[in-house]
Length: 72
Image (cartoon, rainbow, N blue to C red; front, side):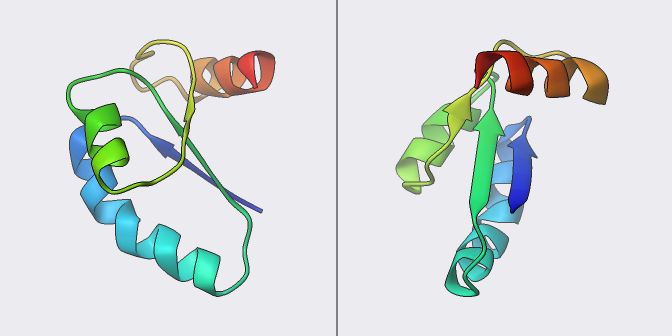
């Protein structure tokens, strides 16, 4: 299982080929994202499924993880 947390627009472009490669390799990929800038609209444009988790929490990994666990 692979979890990719998209926190800003450039991440979508960076992770898109990796997500596709991981899926082709047979991995289960979960993508999470927050409404921040054009992040979710880019994910939609590239048809990358994602779970919307809370709001932008800055760079604090623990807050992001708690958001993912308690909202999933």
